[in-house]
Amino acid sequence: MRRLAVVAAALALAACQVDVEGAACQVPGATAQCPSGQACGNDLRCSRRAAACEGGACTPGQMTCSTAGDVVRCDGTGDAVCGGTWTRVADCGAGVLCGQRTPDADPECYCPDAAGGELWVDPVAGGPQGEPAPTGAREPAQCRFRALSDALVRAAEGGATAVVAAGAAPAVYPVAADLVIPPGVTLRGDDAPAAPAGRILALGDGVVAAGVTLGAGSTLAGVTVRDDAAPDAAVAVRTACAAGDPARVADVAVAASREGGALAAGLRLEGACPVTLERVTVSGAAGPGVAVAREVAVGAPVTAEDSVLQGNAQEGLRLARGDVTLLRVTLAANGGAGLVAAAGADGRLTMEGCTVRDNGATGVVLEANTARVWISGTRICRNAAAPRGAFTTKRAVGGLYLAGNPPAGTQAVGFSGNALHGNAGDQVLVSGSVTAWHLDGGADACGAGRNVFGEYAPSPARGLVADSAVVTARWNGWAGLVPAPGTDYEAVTGVSAASVDASTYCDPPAAAELICE
Image (cartoon, rainbow, N blue to C red; front, side, top):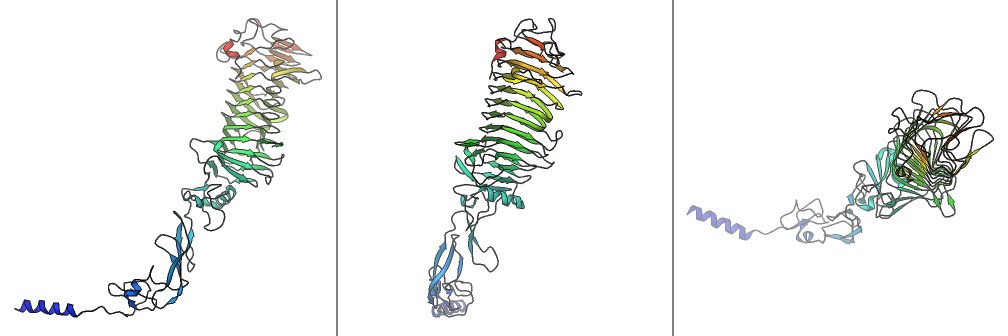
């Protein structure tokens, strides 16, 4: 009986209970302080009507972020309960954040911070300097920078170690002024493997000295640098670095000419930090493809690998000062010589596995007494002749010209495994030396070190000429089976000696050794 009485009393109490509206509350739109089914209205009272306000109760002029991540503002006439309606004032878009960037500020759309030490650039989809301000984040695309210059400025401030050129290929990045890659920063295309043709830095008329300048530890990779309107005195790429980490240019194509003009050089390598060039092509310069004029002659090496210097109006490479090593580099179809170290040049030159062909003048010209000349496994062929010689009388030389005394010291001169053939005029001219140039094939006597001289007819062209010079060239292969003076080699003018004889020679070059490519 007692249990039945308790149940009956509870049912009676429930039947009589009603929800009470009008309870005081503190946060418009909130439900925590209100009975079930009610919310706090703009009048700071709980009610069912407040719970039914579209988008929640709000105060006119109030701004916040919606659940969709957009900026919304409360618009309305000031209804006592609902206050107004939420209206979207900024569509932040996918991936863009909404919130307060600074305390007490209105909410706004803003880009996420860049991640991974990379700043991304997209010349079409990237955001201009405005709202939301680009941060260089990879995604969304509108948060990428639109201009390379903006990203490089941010990187220089410590914002990143890489600037990534992205966007739908082919993407063209206007270069309105000289770009400077800060020390330790990489500017690269985003393609893997690298596809320079899809990332084009177009140099405009605002460029002054160089389209791109690298500092110590800087890298330029995976892009094409193209002259669209730069002044003719400018160059495409320049190094200007104090001693430090190497500056690196890799998988880069330089197109240094345009209709009606051309840059003074493709690359100008200055400064005192080491420089590496990997898979670089340079064409179209009004001067040399690459000009080397370092602050030091030895100790800050320039190393170029698997690169092509072709179709420049003057030399493929001009060495004024510096320590240069070329590994598997092609110097072809340039208007002048393939490579020149002119009189007064100071430095070292190493060529291994290179090809020097089809140039408009002598293939390789060494007029300076550099500290090292080392040429091995290199083909010099089909180059036009130019008048060369240390004295008044000149000879037409298409292959290799060596002027003055050779470098002194151990391992200062090397000449082995080379092929010189099909050049107009003499294949090799040595002029004005008292000390002997050793162009011998090596101690292996007709082994891998054997040099070959071929296709040097008609007379008076020779395989080798010593003009007031001393040179030895034993254990090599000549066009004539047995090398003969006046046909294969010759010593002319003054005190000359060409040490070639009828016993220390090798087989003549085979047809396969005379393919110029």
